[in-house]
Length: 194
Image (tube, rainbow, N blue to C red):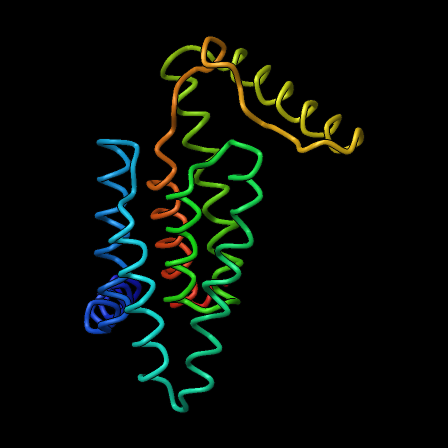
């Protein structure tokens, strides 16, 4: 019973924190938008990032520390995801969403949120492939894309992880994975696990 009370206390604390409340709402809207239309609106990512940068700067003990944390998280979130956009396996909205989330949680937590996001993405991709009964096809696509990226890198040309549309098993709304990974990281951080 003590654990349940601790979880309720944690949830109450997260809801009372304006920054976490805003992040949760923005991630939820982004996940729903990505699910419905495979798009994450710029107003959401840019507006959320601006809010996080301003709030993080003004709410910190010193503005310099708050700004460094917010801009650092934004930069880490962007830098961790942009290579996947460059090789064509992730959309620009996903990159901007991770950068926005990073602005809310700071650089150290952003690294863990990216890790949790990749885990959530792997689980979601496997569930998607199992649902469509195309696991073998998905694994072959992953192998082919990885080989293509590796050989392109060796040859010194711009790598591409794109899969021909006829070979793809479908699109995964990765905004959901970013929302799930970030939320799990925030909760795990508050509970002292990471």
